[in-house]
Image 1 (cartoon, rainbow, N blue to C red):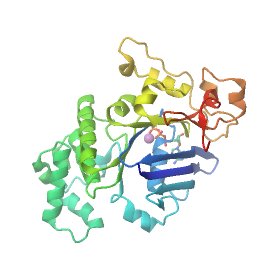
Image 2: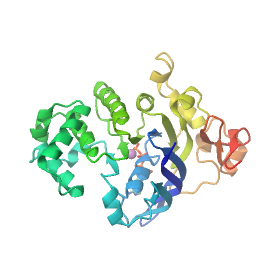
Image 3: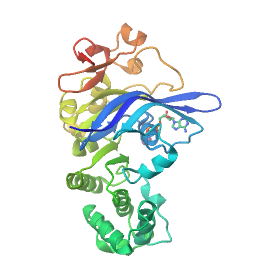
Length: 327
Ligand SMILES: Nc1ncnc2c1ncn2[C@@H]1O[C@H](COP(=O)(O)OP(=O)(O)OP(=O)(O)O)[C@@H](O)[C@H]1O
Ligand code: NI
């Protein structure tokens, strides 16, 4: 196994006039080449913040980032914006939920693809670009003729597929989907996920899949990282975590997805709300909502514990049971 991305204590803080919002705290984990990592957690837990920080798409003036994010030996956080511009779309690309909004309504898809392609490969010929894009259109199950269409001639689902194809133009090593399939109907989403998984096999790619939908992770990821209020609660292989979630938050999340557990089971949403992220909390960030919290949980933050199946859990329940980091 070869590590492609290694995060070491990444923190992302939004700094506004009146307060600071600690949106991502102490993120430390690695992704191996060929992994597909689902990042899940309820709305506001910091998923997009982390993705944007890795690609340096945030507002530099009002966002503080610390720690290291090593991508193939280069630190994404410390590199200059020029270095980042060279990497972005070529080695790492991202697809957002409404990626199609970035397309121009007045030009044909092919023309826009040429422009995008030329940013990194100014010498490329039109024929070469067209061949590459048509290959990708087929991968996302679109007909060749899409290359000559205008955006308004296509459905939202078709456009989102186009956006996914465009993100693959330069054969990126790492692709980040931030709710990229969320707005699509269930059938289209399922189809795209299947195609993405197939595509990865053909293209030797690594993927980070940001979603609040556990069924998306089940359908398309080999690992899952569970985020709550800016922190990672549990990270590991999908088959182990879905079968035996250890962190009480993961247990709550999985319980709120009936499709994974059989339709007859009642939905259990986790009671309560995300904490105020502008306040620093002494103990475990999940303690106020945790059904298993003890007095200790409110006092002191648990450390990451590593289990035999390779997963990380950040919870006092497992502090002694697990194999500690470095032991
Ligand atoms: N520019 C900003 N300034 C201040 N706070 C922000 C800013 N952008 C996001 N936040 C806050 O940071 C936290 C994390 O937001 P983020 O968008 O990363 O969450 P998310 O997990 O992607 O949520 P969702 O599933 O809704 O997309 C939230 O509490 C949000 O209110
Ligand atoms: Ni988001």
